[in-house]
Length: 150
Length: 103
Image 1 (tube, rainbow over the protein chains, first blue to last red):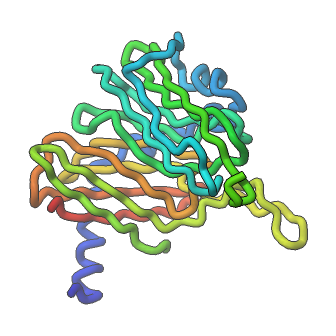
Image 2 (image 1 turned 60 degrees about the vertical axis):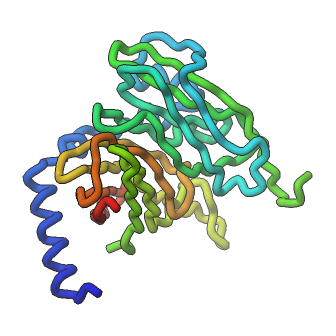
């Protein structure tokens, strides 16, 4: 068991680590344009990717039918070398972008998140490469709003 | 300050599988309350993960990530005993960091 004092001490250590590490990515401006873009195409453009092509080396995992649109588990991954960012997109949401991850050498291009979906839609996994090319995979997820399986 | 995250990190070979469950409202800004007023958006914008103090992954999220977000990823070159820390920051400036040890 941890007591309050130990917890506080640990928090202070973590805060100190953060301060020294500087967390440079937090200094960057939040990419508003990409998160307001309505279509998958616009998101890719806002992320600064030059070309877009479908690829079998990128994969998206998710349910074929989601009973509850508020919690749709999605998994994006890529086996390509030199991936800079992995994006998760839901085409028919008010804003297509769910989120993206900056990939480093120390982490696999393989992320799972849960997304909200307003209606049945195509979902995309997009891998943006270091050279600016983008590759995607898509999958249709049906959302049954009533929860009756219809 | 928000509730703590639950982080599990498990090493298999030299890959650590990290699973994070954050506690956050993730209000989309699309929903209306009983009086018909729009509920303002409140969601995690930035997140990052570090291994032994070195940033290995970062990302940005929009409001369409589910409430109490779940995130899973794999860190290469991690072994049991290493420290994995995850930090998030939301659009109201609230932030939280939690740390765990790779098992």
